[in-house]
Structures are given as structure tokens and as C-alpha cells.
Image 1 (cartoon, helix red, strand yellow):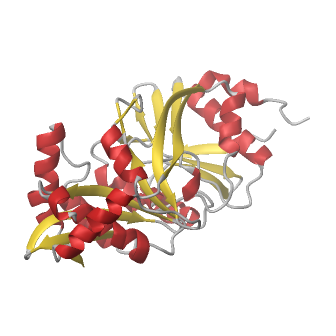
Image 2 (tube, rainbow, N blue to C red; image 1 turned 60 degrees about the vertical axis):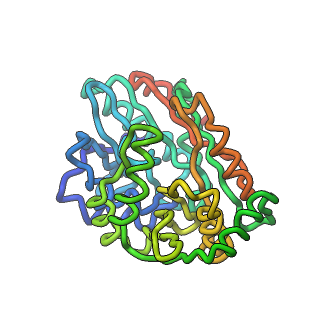
Length: 325
């Protein structure tokens, strides 16, 4: 079993990190350093690079809090990033080396938020096997509602009626970058009223991110009589379109605004993607499901896949010895 060298990310690694991520089998633009660092003031970055000699073979977007390392809490998904040629034996060696490194610097636990399989370019579940071998504990499981756009799917009768309502109300969809209009008039008021919360991204942050990743972040507003009545911000990867924000005003059911918008996105704008990922409908860390939101997503033809969260003791690195016989 090999012992690889591990070190923390520094600004000097910016280019080598991003070059590696750009060709990895299980990475998206969220793992680019420009995305990871937009909220660097909120997290103690503790991202790791794994080397075999002088060759970079894996990166791990991560942050540290006390004696726990997290696959980055500021990202929707995360975990180890590998290139397409990685072998299972190498992944086991990498996992052992990282756990041993963390144990040596008094980080007792490691929590991983895995990337859903729909985002991967190739099969990439080697780390799940390593977690099994190290007695990792499944601490959370989120249900994602996803439309497989490569297979037949259908909208429910209710959705079709609402889409026709949007047509009759002469709604207009515009792709534009009026984030302030959507944030201030629709999104923030709705989140405040319904959940007493705020968007994960400030409007300044989403504008900055869109400028850095114009092909990966697109925004659409819906108008009725020239007035904004809803909108959505979509994060786009090679295979997946994922609504990061969805919100409509109090007339959304009467006007059919969101159904009208999502019909356009699913059947026209992103029809050539593999998946349309509505994301989770959970509350209380996956323990409860918002039935109304889940019903809405499933009525577009979405089915369920999961995203898993694990916790492993770094002292268990020795369990990865002599696995291959």
C-alpha cells in the first residue's frame, strides 16, 4: 500500500488545482477555486492536495471547524476529486493517507458530503467502498427529485393545466441578469415571510459568481404585464441543470407562472442535458419532507435519487491496510 504526500491548499496552488478539476471525472465548476472562495470569510479553508511524488492525483475541497474536517460546508456537494484513470486500489491508498494525515494533526473526525452520481462523468463510487471499510457512519441522506431527460417522462394533468393558464395570461419569459430585481422583489420577501431566512448567496455574490462562470449560471425571470412575477437561477454542469433558486409572487398559482417557466426550461432550454435536478425537498437535515414541494417536483416527472453524508473517525485509517489480497 502506497503512502502519498498530503498538504493543504495555498494560493500558489490555484492553477494546478483548477487544471486538475477541469479534467476530473467527478468535479463541476463548484470545485473551481473562484467558486469555493467566494465565501472564504465564512469558513476556515482546509482543502487538501494529494501527490504521488510530483504528480497531483486527488484534491479535496474542505474546511475545518475545531477537530473536524468537512468536505466543504459551503458547497452543495463535495468529497474527493479524482481523474478518470484512477483505480480502486489507488483510491483506498489515498483515503488511508488522508485519514492518517488528519489523525496526525489531531483532526478526529472527517465528514463527507458526497457528490450525487448524476453529476459524475464516469462511475465514481470508489470512496463509498473506502467509507464502508473504515466503518464510516451514514449521518444524513437527502432525497433529490430528478428528471432523467434521456428517458420518456410526462407532466401531470395539473401541471399541464397550469402551463396553459400561463399561456392564456400572456406570460413572458426572459433570460437576463436582473438578479437585483428577482432578489429584492421576489426571493428575499418570500424567504423572509415563509421561512424567516435569507438566500445562501447575497445578490452581490451571485452577480460576482455569474460573471466568473457565465456558462454555468443562468437566470430567467417571468413577467406579467411588464411586471416580474417569478424567476429562477440555474446552475449548469456538463450533464445537469439544477435550479439553485425558484420563487414566485403570491399570484404564481393564479397565473401559472412557475409551471409556465419550468415547462420552458425542461422541454426547451435544457432538453439536451441528461438530468434536470430539482434538488431536495427536505427539512430538519433530511428527516422531514415538505410534501407540497415534493408533489410539485414529481408532477413534472421527477424521480428520486439520494445524496449521502458520512462521518468517519480518522483513527480508522489502519482498517485500510491489507485490503487487496
